[in-house]
Length: 291
Image (cartoon, rainbow, N blue to C red; front, side, top):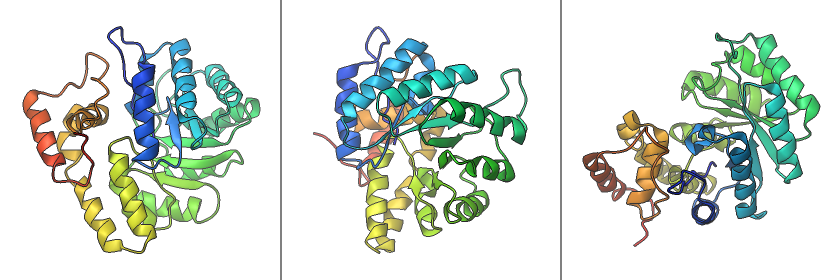
């Protein structure tokens, strides 16, 4: 689960706000694993390398051993990714997360290139690896290429962002149920992922608060309740995704009384009407409001 990143007026990471936010993620969202500076909703890509490392350190310190932490090390440079991986290991991280890379000079990588990229990083780091699949920021790997990477010894987790049920179903069968790695999808696919034998999903807050309720209902055998909760994702966040996932999550947190500030400028700010519509919808969900 990736906590969002609060920024102060100088656009530096607000450590106090981050600590409070992580408490919500651990306690109310019942995170089983925290991602530090690993996905685009965390806005880590705006930060210079030294500040990205400080975000990682601040996240691990705020989690304080309550759940495992997976550190994002994605970078076009293999050497920089290795540096981040070694930094994560020194801080006691549980695993490292690595976006399937695009070619730095453009174009889709071959399967051999992606496997080589992961092999080079695995040779210089000592933590389990989570393969992160998010076409756009990263490469759009085919099913066969995904299987090749998932079979690598050090790859223990796969995070899938496609929301393509045909693809997800096949990869759950050939990766998770085949014993190669734990397979994780998105909030929109959470219930069907669990029903097909996958390991769950990664999702930002406050989506994660509802996600925890879905998982709890499913584990208790109450599929009807799990489906009722899952239906709340039919409009949220889809109805507001023209603004982007991260801005929608920050706007939702604000509407719920858990605000951690605005998106890093200049992208993604909600209009007053959009914020009001979102706040009204959230009143119909099982998300908890803070008075």
